Amino acid sequence: MKRQKTMDNSEISHGLILKIVTPRGTDKKIECDSINLSMAGGDKMKEGSIGIHHGHENAVIALKKGMCTARLSGKIVLEKELDGGFAVVKDNCVSVITDNN
Image (cartoon, rainbow, N blue to C red; front, side, top):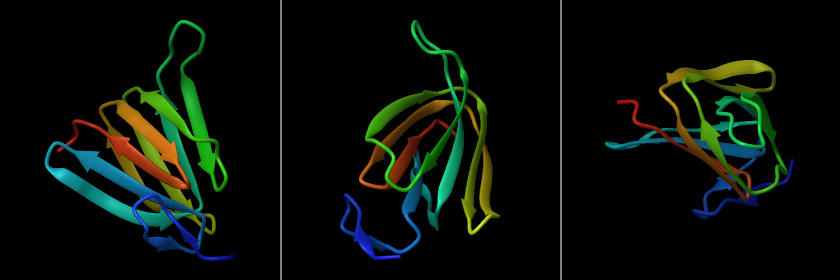
């Protein structure tokens, strides 16, 4: 796979960078090729889960309490329970902003 630049100019080779950001700063930063998050519901959206892969449209996603799971080549490289928050998807970089410490 081609190496690509993310919004913070780092290079990735597996399609996605996942950053977990807490009030203390960036808690985790990993390379992965898929991310699953628990999505909060709203007026027009039902709650459930969302899968993010390379090339996902830019988005801001409200998250409910649940698991964040990142995989690389089918293997789980991160599994973390989140208290909710938001995920920002931009240029194959997913920043999860949460109150988890």
